[in-house]
Length: 611
Ligand code: F6R
Image (cartoon, rainbow, N blue to C red; front, top):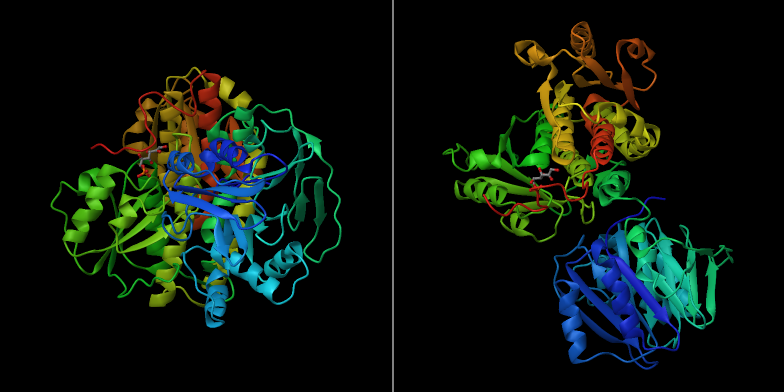
């Protein structure tokens, strides 16, 4: 199971004061989310909630003024997915006696919320989590025999991913935790129990841990945990002693955040598609937004890796929706007297949502009358705030400076946008729609397969770690991946690398080839495959060393290259979500072999808020 980096949860039940224990845990979890935080602590009468927008320091300040007293409680640090970061949207969420913290996405929250509102319930936040609090309270009012019984009844109505911790004012010294597709671990103390999204939060308290599995529900008190499934059948899970340091545990055992984030990509794409890709109708919904009127042109604006995602977006939008699409570097667009207007949809793509050039370009387009659409990973950051419409990638916080999981999540978001537009203008219909949606559903699985198959690339990195230059070639939707592969390599390994459209090789770069220059060629099956093979032969004929990214089973390619990195077969438009993975791993392995600081490469910052 891959770690899901989105929000952090802690819980404590025992005999000590809960507040300092929860706070210590949240400090260790802040890397999982940091736009708001909160705790609920109960002294057996009524839970006391303290929560606020902002980093944990803001919560600590509030708690320094008045710290809730009690020996059981839950806490949360948030990375927004539904509802902007605000005091009201901060967890825990309360309904009647129930307080809940949640990590994940309740996919059917809209229907559930409508039903609950129709039955007279009042909501005080925009989150999907508040739905869970109401469902549990409703189950209790309907006669559920215990808190754990009520949680079971609630979860049976929910689809999606969750890790939750729940307390009730009326069930003293009891916590309930449940997990499906989001991580959750129990810490076993002496006369006390802990809950956490992952081990680092509670390592200071105990090393004896019990990792819950999907479908598990645990009822905890100071003496231990009873684990059952959704139907109440007992489940046995074996505790284990964790030997990681807190630092290692933060990275889920990976040596670097970048490697962890590379491996989180299947999850990031799954989450970005969740609830938006509709396999029953072969459609895509953009939350409750509609791009109306349909644009006559799409203009994508972005920088760096997000710009490369935009270049893939052009293929997706033009092929799937048959709408002309241009892609521009935000830093160029804003100073160019651009021609945009009311019939254009201007899409700003940004991981951070704060990139100064992209923000200025989006504002410029809006001032000229264009409708603006943000694809962004940070909820309520500057670019979404400056845009008319927004689609959030749900990659979770990206800590490694080199962007990886946000890139593939951006590709997933762009595919949703293309399907949405194509369905509305009729360009995508019938079998083509069915096939595309079915293939897209397969992508996260194929991504996992690719990561597994590629492995650590240490041997390949040793071979090339001392070269001066690298060339990356690709065609069609894989041309932007050649650019991205080169960018990844240069930014963390500091080796000069260039990405080129394979067809352009003969117009200049071919002069570079010779003396064993490594050339990475994306040569996957599909349109243009034969042409790429000719490029490959041209490189070989000039003593270049070819590292091919090829379709699994394409044995014919084996004797034409030095090394092959395999990806599963997929339609060309969806291949970029696969072909980029071995290139990220290659950059990582080469940087590591050269002894570089992979997570914080020289001269770079995570968010570029200057021009
Ligand atoms: C490369 C990288 C940068 C960013 C660029 C735009 O790994 O991270 O090239 O992609 O600075 O940043 P965002 O997406 O935050 O606008």
